[in-house]
Image (cartoon, rainbow, N blue to C red; front, top):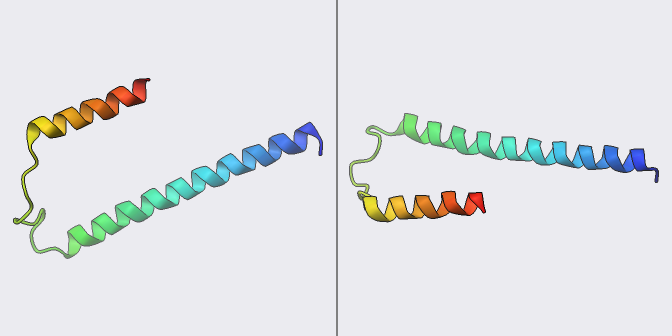
Amino acid sequence: MSADARVRNARLAVWILIATEVMLFAGLVSAYLVLKGSASAWPPPDLPVLPLGRTAANTAVLLASAVT
């Protein structure tokens, strides 16, 4: 297999990966929109309120892990 064929195969693999991620994200967004559209009230009134401190700390940890 030539070097050009390997590059083409790698590029195709990356495009397939990107396409599958786009389809996954589109499926999640469409499921959210279907659920939101079929609900009488959004968000549902019985959802618990997230603790602000813990939520902020978890967000900070996620953002810090993206930097390193």
